[in-house]
Length: 157
Image 1 (cartoon, rainbow, N blue to C red):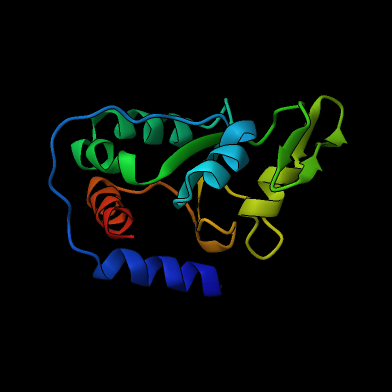
Image 2 (image 1 turned 120 degrees about the horizontal axis):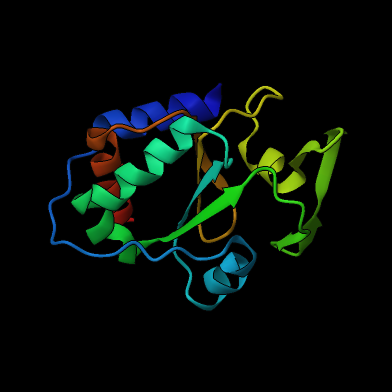
């Protein structure tokens, strides 16, 4: 609940960013640790699945959002498929796929980063600082205004 409150407060009080058109550079989640250690800056992770309609809508929104694109040089952006079966090493810990049934399950990293009250929703946004501390988690779709506010915050970080 604390993460949700912090995230909502953060989004409510940030000023909108204005910038030029750019391209969001997505860092593969398994390369994020090295990137942060080489050039420290905050990281924004979008946890999603391939079957999630809201996740697809959010990703399409990101491609159109000029504020988010122009601010993306100030932070790392990574996507994490919550159902990937590949092991991922993140901040010196290796996480694997946790099977919950026949051909279904959740990746341990998605759960470790994105769970709120032992539940994982899709999409979930996770913001971490350069020391891998989770600053906030937000389960759900961010609208255009909220994305712009988040981008403005990350531009000032």
